[in-house]
Image: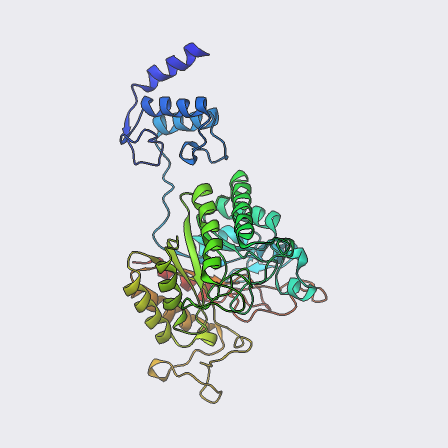
Length: 449
């Protein structure tokens, strides 16, 4: 065995190529060669488990990583660089619809048996987002019928499918057993017995670590990780309950909130060092994003991407988003921005909409530029999508758009036992025909530069 090792080193000594640090260049000399093999063997012998040596991403540093390094030296490092721009959807319910028998058709009514790869092949998408709850079994029956079903086993399976299909995978960690949003950030039931904020931060770290290790081991390593969902007012209430401008509310504080964010970020950086870390807020008040990230930066929050939810039915016309993006770009130069959630109805307005764009006869009506409207139709949804993309392309920092719940489709599902209690009104599918609306195909134009 010893002689084989030195023979391997001798042969590899004849192979040298330039390399970027972090791609097998373990001794940081700018090249891939026998020196990196020696460095890796040294790490294995002393039990150094630094993640940079875990080249095959199996959470271990051993001879498997040596084999991977051999392949890098002989064949070159695979190009796993992420695309600069991302477009896709939060498809957290896709497998539930498929399991229930939903039929996804193309625009010509041809049945698509496996819609996941088709989204990329036909619609040009390159990224997918999936939410994860701590234990959705603790959600109410009503919440489960709304779509609160994504436990770790579910996300592992769907995440692996997403990666196998060649998409970028965005993981949306809720840190709750049910929906987490500006109106609620409920602590998971099993975490309520934790007596201190430091103990809760430790739990955030260990939970996030376990989730990411499980996904990595299954071949579903996330490319983007969102630590919390719409955390404009904090998370893990009551102790993490805050105002965006730095104030505290209802027993919470930014000190505690930052403990939780830092714990989550530490786990992400350790387990998925190549992943982009996202902090995600919404725009119920259009001053919230700027206030939140000013406060977060003042406390040295660790993140790569400013994530936003933008629904015109709740947040206002595109001009509102334009102003928010301009402020964020000005005050946070160097940070990427992504629209992590958006949507507009093709058949009905969204429930409880604050603003209407279909007709001036409904109040409160928000007129669009040039007195145009977005009708509640496929054409109206398409026009919204075009307008959103045109706006986002004006801002160099905007690198991604994700449509929320585009896959909602009850076509061919047993009407006596639907997947959800009610249809989501901003889906990209016609639930009566199983055919996609035109906006599904329009989204890819965001990638055209």
